[in-house]
Image 1: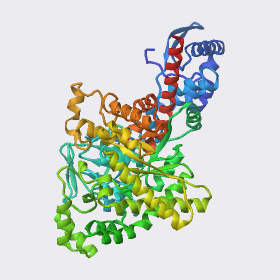
Image 2 (image 1 turned 180 degrees about the horizontal axis):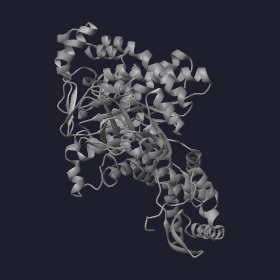
Image 3 (image 1 turned 135 degrees about the vertical axis):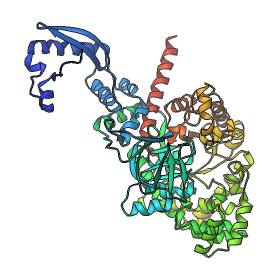
Length: 612
């Protein structure tokens, strides 16, 4: 107790494992040790949990001083819960309830060795868990080039955009000076399983010089840093890591969780790697495939820009015809990996200006490289400029203004489904989702466009597959007028990232500048982009569920925002009666466990009501 003696092992096995010469308690005091084992067993059975026990032995007599439930790491909590259930001390359901879902992050990602020295050079938000070490790079193309050469790199950017996807895939980790927990960098990094520190405002980046400065120090491209995405810290140099181990206990607990949960768990995924990762973690389909990420691939971005620069529908269709084979190929791969599970594909969502460069120098370089008219490119960029693009010409508004874009995507999805059906004999289940719908007449127009295109595809192929058509509910009006939408939709997917933005009138990418002040003053209890606002945004979801199913009782509903991986938000989805949640691949196990705990909690509440 005083800490002045060198401890000796309790058991012979422990002594041998540690290579100690001093005898263990089991060897030195066999009678007292047997008594101790008996008392410990009784305490554990009584409290039905692993115990942290203090004891002493005086003149051959055992004295118990204190016992309490023992603190434990996520790995230990998992093992203790599974062991207690296996020994019959607690039930499997209680074992499922005892493990904190968010703690599973510790098991799914590399972590920094707690014994290693940490020299923190900057701090931001813990946007995506895990740890990584690599050379600093400031450019997505350079990240990809160095990674292909075998280097580990950390991508450091002011903020990321869909154009950076290839560099984010190549990097071991990502740091951004701007952005919140649901910024582009944070969302994409979590989906990829990459550690990310976002909103590190103390970092000042000079891309031209190839440096960043923080806390009075300057770091150059090529220097090695380490990031801890779980704590939101950037560290100097390389730091020792501990690799994750998904043990048998993990699989055992997940199987018990799956037996009791009602909510299905899907993944947000648009690359084959993401889809395979999600399947490996137990995803039951794809709840959100963001097709815009496919458009930025080097092999097709030129045709995308050609489509944007087209002066009329004929030229747009010619450019879209070049993109279509790539889209079909993408969907074939995803549908094959998901092997008959539902795959929800969101049609093109971001404004078109995101697909062309922003500065004059970049436009000149692009024009020279691709043989484009620089003046025309700049004029088109000016035409596409919007004061508030996220509330501008995006989402289904693109499909209404340029129906040929959505026709091409619908055709590609269904042709891919037919190809997979013919190759495997098992028909996939494509779910075609129109984003940012606000009006019943919008949904009617888009439904007719989808069905008309489907009839053409099936007539040409002499075969057909079942498909669903629905919308992403991400505007308050869509929730309030859900009955109008339900007349023409077979599913609602709540895009809670945008629904939170449009309900609060807060940009998730810019909220980092003031959100902490709201949290510090208790105005916000939690970040609404991390944990669902169950009063405001939640009320809109309740209203949409009630009004949508009043028109169409079998309407499928789920959420696909980042809240789909947050345990308290998943509990809300259970109470509302949604059918599934969809989240980043690496959060699928967390969602599975949280969904099981939500089901157990709901069952317990029902039993209490009966007892009354």
